[in-house]
Image (cartoon, rainbow, N blue to C red; front, side):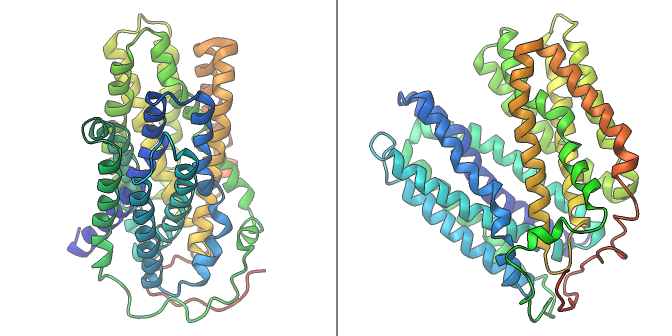
Length: 420
């Protein structure tokens, strides 16, 4: 692994950390602080609206692609959106949660919009600067950044808030975002050629054309189902531990710290494995791991729930989720059209977000109705269904990027034509 390749990975890791730590803070720590300040559960529920920009970001992804003629142009989007993101974070620190709640919510939505824009540009930037063989480890950086961000944003920052208070914490968070931008500011591994001199043919409705590709239906269904066999377990793991009688403090460590750390650690082996075996050969491995997780949790319901068994289950759960994430991101990069990197990758990730949202909502209802063992059994059934459908959903000819969608190397030229 050369110096240039390591530089790419470090740059991507810093970018994903820059977006994930503040996001984790706003979505997980703020509710805790609000409850400590005696806010109603209804008000805390409204806080979930701040995530909306990440669900609808595909709407403005074509604008980012249309105005980006090279990886350097995508870098401009990254820098400008993150600088704005940092400024909003710092400004939130000047408001008081008790008296300025509505203003803070509005600013959070604006901040998440900027962060979502940065994510579009960062994903496209990664696709362009990474060679095909580098993408699996590059996506390990994306997953690792997300898990480390969750670990820091939901744990460490709450401790800092306890000792320093609201304003210093938000200001430090803004400074952290700025520091995280240093690697991309000095990133030199760009091609001297422009990717495309003109992208006038990119439509504002480009995301519609993505779904008109031949055989795209199987791929979309695969993305929608890929996490489905473990998301329900991941959603219900904390309530499950509560019902087993574990204290909140211990649950926070088991799932929030230990589990997230396991996920972060397993992203690298997953990336190396995919790089060695290739996407086409490794596609079966991760669904099988997800099935094993569901089997383990069913087994767990027949035990006395000894602590070491809980730790093993949480480690398996978060590791499988992290490894599946690396695979999904790498697979998504295989299915981007030339000149539409940000749009196409964003659409695919939004599909997985929507799937996770649906499964998460249903999992609570299912667990209430037929208990946790029933939920785990249904998750196992979904996992087995994915394995049965995999030969029909994962068609090798669709993922032959040289025929369907040529691999885009950094600096490659793009033909200027409209996608019909």
